[in-house]
Length: 289
Image 1 (cartoon, rainbow, N blue to C red):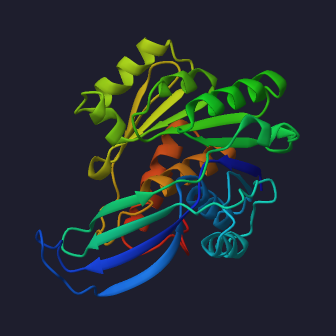
Image 2 (cartoon, helix red, strand yellow):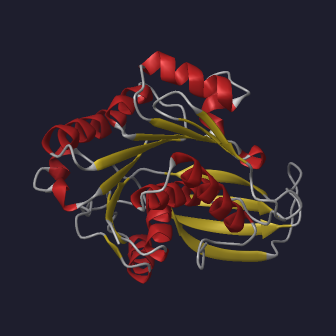
């Protein structure tokens, strides 16, 4: 068992399951409706807890009733959030998700007014308490300063960063990470339609000396080792039911494998497998190898 910290956000997701996406200015009946605690960092931690690790989360919490629901789910998943500042007179981030049963895809409307983490929120934290610290690629200025500080003060702590969406200057985070985890969405946003070309160009651009990974949906996932060896793993052949949080599960499986001393290829295979299992079920409970 390892101690893992993830830094990012938590949300409350309102999910409506429909047969098909509605036409403009039309009305459809939802087949299911439920609330779910979301957020990339906390999803990844929930899976890591299931895989046997001691997990902590650092991010901001509102002081409304929705935050109580988020905390209740974190408690259920035994994720420590005692480090998180509560922001007075604030509203929890929410996502309204329309999930199509026909396509197993989803549309998301996200609302967020809650402030991001500040450097002052972490001044008293001893980051040497964790073996692995995982960052959502967001809040770039503060995230960069935190990664710099941890890398300088605690060089033995392993750092990973998820680059899911294009954001201003987000590439600045990569030089401080030991493991860089990219999404297909990010690669596509940079003009790439093949993971191999994207990974090779990223490595050259950044003079990267770390392992670089890119998940690519139904095509599986690709990785480029620090020595320039390209690796690939196919996606799990499964009847896709729900793709929500598949990327978060992929990241958790990768972190788990590397903490267990597995090779880059093995980590890639384990990540594709568990993300595939997740796509065949609703939610992230009960995932295992």
